[in-house]
Amino acid sequence: MSNFPVTVERADIPDAAELGEVAAATFPLACPPESTPADIAAFIEQWLSAERFREYLKDPARIVLRAVSDGDIVGYALLNAGEPADPDVAAVIETRPVTELSKMYVLPGHHGNGVAAALMTAALEAARAEGSAAVWLGVNQQNARAQRFYGKHGFVIAGTKTFLVGSQRHHDYVMQRSF
Image (cartoon, rainbow, N blue to C red; front, side):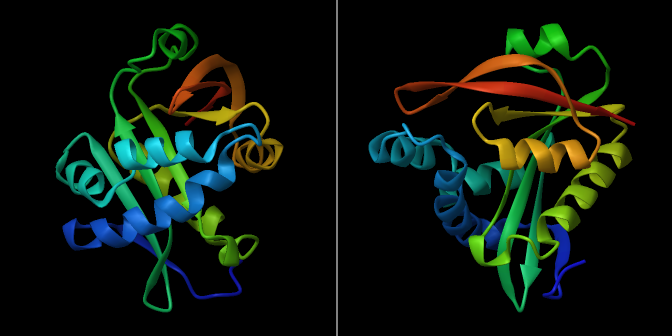
């Protein structure tokens, strides 16, 4: 359980700027050591800006959850409903309907305090409430800590895929949890 009181709820448009800040602070932590600062910055600018979060928050096929502690957003999760667009993922995720857990990050000062577990519980509940029979995610093959966390929450490796960060191609495991 969390050492800090944390509330997880759906984010809204006014949260976009703060979500972008949390994303910029947390995304680099999940990247493999060979990731360059320029490639990480390019990814953040393309996919994790405040403007992108505004788009995500307006999209009915996406759910953005925020974890709030002491009035600040300390983590977030981004879910995408629908068919996997990546052919490698579509080939190994057979359960339908399915939701992707696209992003789930927590600020470093809140690691190990139950925030990630609260976000995961809320993300799984949201996917199930939307009618999904399973949730899938991609996790870098070098990120053993995240893989252990997902395993504790019932995810198993279903296959592999590549993931582009800037100009660098990374190798991910595709993990799935069925309900």
